[in-house]
Image (tube, rainbow, N blue to C red; front, side, top):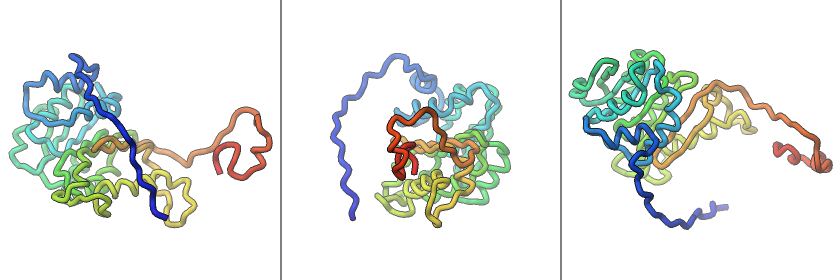
Length: 253
């Protein structure tokens, strides 16, 4: 049986931008006169939603792909002086962006050996932002090698997922080797504690991942150690006969 088409109608009216957004990342960007950075407008809300709890803490942030260095200034302003920021880029000239509390590593994020060097250099990684080359194998290799090195309550963010649909980056709709298709398989791993299929078994990703959040061209993965969930109940059945039907009552099979 083929999958039914999915079509939702919509209308679009761009909202007027307020003078102050209430988002410190957006506000910094709006007044920024420093080094160049380039962001999609909806990214700031996503960053703030998942990064706010690290502000003012001695966290370690790894950003892959630093461009002209404007985002390094953004993170410094947002996370504060206690943060250790590690910028990673393939361009050797990016070394000039190093500053007190901000380190620069040079290498190719597609290279597993270099990715391991990043992990060894960083030690604990609380936040990782993959804004690198955006090619499929770069994004996949980075997640495979660095996600296990993210702190137990850390955050992994990969942005510009739209390249999974662009042929020049190795993408294409439903092509099996894109980062988007790869990440869909991680949804199965996230839910593997509930599997009844021998092909899907819980693994380290299952036991260390709390949630996956998809946004327009972004994936945010939040880590948290976990065990298989337990079904709990409270209250008295209102419809006693529902308890006699398999798969009814609690909503669980």
